[in-house]
Image 1 (cartoon, rainbow, N blue to C red):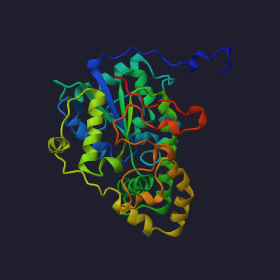
Image 2 (cartoon, one colour):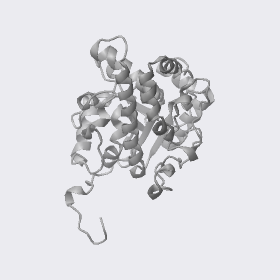
Image 3 (tube, helix red, strand yellow):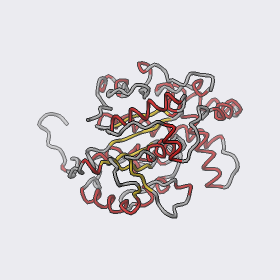
Length: 335
């Protein structure tokens, strides 16, 4: 709005009372098949983190808090994995009419029966993929909330999501070429929205799956950085893996998708090749899917995503936007 113009009151953020620091929320988000469960399970194993254990929930719903609340639509209602970001209802900000104290109270009441490990916990962690598109909304409800977004190579996500949807949705054994390409386009839509939101978020950290799993030291650095952000004591990743009942983190997360990409029909190569400049802008050229390539992304000065190898308080994420946003500190982490 130009100076002196009167704004529409309906376009103003809704005032929401802050939640006490003792009840701080951590929200994990990221597209399906990006590693949200891996990251959430490790963090929930930390003795100072309360997580959700939802009795009777089907395994495929992965203990996600979205399925036991009555405030916003779940991912499946928005189109499901590989599609939900195209639905305008998925993107929620502080200007949403539901960004009210009543919504915060309703969510806390819905989630209250499912918290485990609350005694001695400093934070409560909820994981749902579409949190990546409603971080601004959740921040409006709980201004001191902390947001962890995990990102994975778009082609790996596309193949993995299309295959999962084929098995669980239509009963097919393999994904179609068209669905792979559509899932790749969905990745771009979701991350374009996320990127535009970052300058409005106060406490956010971006984790690249490939970097996180590249070595035990890299995984430890990432967990250490998150714990430092949240004021949690340092715990060895090996201890978290054991407590979560997981095996050691594997670095080969994208290997089979590199093979699948090489084996695909020329039409898929052509379609994905046409999208490569946009993938590369996020630090994910097609060649980086090759397991022989370095686990580290392209130099931050050449892409729109930062890196988590440094527990820096100022990620280079937002600095690579259009000139009007250059230099904005989108990932500042308050003490």
